Length: 419
Ligand SMILES: Cc1cc2nc3c(=O)[nH]c(=O)nc-3n(C[C@H](O)[C@H](O)[C@H](O)COP(=O)(O)O)c2cc1C
Ligand code: SF4
Image (cartoon, rainbow, N blue to C red):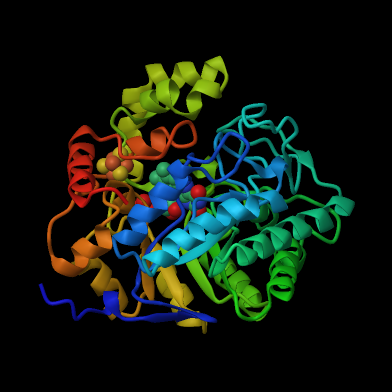
């Protein structure tokens, strides 16, 4: 297959240039040591992706403070002694020509209390999170400079480790999204209420991070196209485009567009949900939830699965309509995540001008050599969006748990030889 395609054209993201337009989006790897240090198992994961020709890799979310750690074996960028391990990731990616961007996150209220050592989750306001069950404590205004510092200091550690940039995670209902969204932010101080007030913390995080990392380090942002919180005060695409515009003025170089909070359900990972809830309860994070949640996921698995299949069916480029709006109104590159798997759909999305680049999560979990396969036309293991990787996310090393696809992946990696 000819490789002349927009997918393999370079793309400038502020101070860096990616040698192509299919990126690996953030997928929590759950492969760090229990205390959040880079492990050999984590390095291997990136080595395969980089060797597979991926031009730009965004790490799974890295916690910026212990209080923001959402899952077991999550990697951290919260302390200086983690920098040497992070440097191993950067060296590995660079050895194969890939750029590395660290996704920085604080989970806020989206955590199972006690499971990762977070006994007192925090948020913009004390609004109960219905999926995990946490009732967070409202952050005091004198604690907010600490949040700003945690993000900026983590970015500096990534820069010192040799990363090419960081991505501030302000999507998916995590802490920064909790400040932006009126449903989760009911504060009466300067950080709640009006658009400007809800934006204040994220603006400070972005501004301070840019100030400390300097101009030669890429600063990306992950933002929802829509919060998808019907009957609650969620943000819609107009609000999010306005937020993006303000944050570009603070120094953001590119925006990745996604969707949803945890309490939206699973529009963020639209796919197939047959057996998903039982898997989540038995092998995934459900194991650490209360009995009532475990019971309902196990016994109503078929009902929940059928409903979810109808609500969130898989579709290539399922966030493209949002991305198109960002692209039309912003001066920086837009990256669209969501269901991308085939060369035709990716090329079409870029050719029609709906996005500048696409990013994929599950397609890379199934096939770390996805970019090489897109380039050569050789078939590779093909994700079927069964969501079993998601069901187990955060409890064991991320991988493909679909028996057919996993067998193909193992065959491929064995044929490639050791990394
Ligand atoms: C196993 C798994 C882990 C994920 N971890 C993260 C994460 O750490 N940070 C993040 O922003 N999104 C995370 N996501 C969401 C993905 O980044 C992405 O938005 C979503 O999977 C849709 O893209 P896809 O259809 O290409 O998989 C995760 C998704 C999966 C399946
Ligand atoms: S388990 Fe494998 S096939 Fe299923 S969604 Fe995840 S990567 Fe795709």
